Length: 192
Image (tube, rainbow, N blue to C red):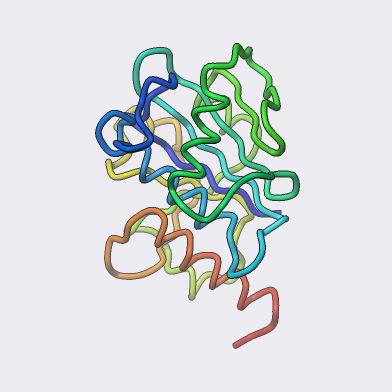
C-alpha cells in the first residue's frame, strides 16, 4: 500500500469554489486535483493500492482532510474537473474527527497534518532530500506541499521525518508523484 498526502495551504474548506476557477476561487484546488489524478491513475486503470490524502488548510473552516481510496473510488475520471466535482460533493458534508465516507472511496474529516502524522509515518518529498534512485529502501507514505513551501510550523511537526527527492530540479507536486510512482513501479517489478 502506498499513500500520498498533499498540503493545500490555500485550498477552500467549503464548496463555495467554482469548478471553472479552481486556481482562484478554489485556492489552488487545481494543484490538488492533479495530485489526486497522478496518485491514482494508470493509463487504463486505477492504482487500487494507493490512498491519496488532501489536507485542506484554507478558509473558512479548515483544516479538513479528504481521503481518496484507490481500492474503492468510483465516478472519478482522469481530469481536474472530475476530482474537483467529488471534492465539492464531500467538502460541505458535516463531519467529525473520524473519516466519514460520502462518496464511494472518498471520505472527509476535520483535522489536518498533525493528526495524519500521528497515524502513519510519512516521508517528506523535498528537493533537498536523499535521491530516491540512490535510496536502498523507500517508505510507503509520502508527504508533499502544494505550490507553496512547508511553513516553519509544518517543518517543526515533520521534525526528523526522512526526506527524499526525485531529482535535481524542483517539480510540480503532481509530476513528483508520477516520477516517484515510476521509481516504485520499477522496484516492485524488478526492472533495473
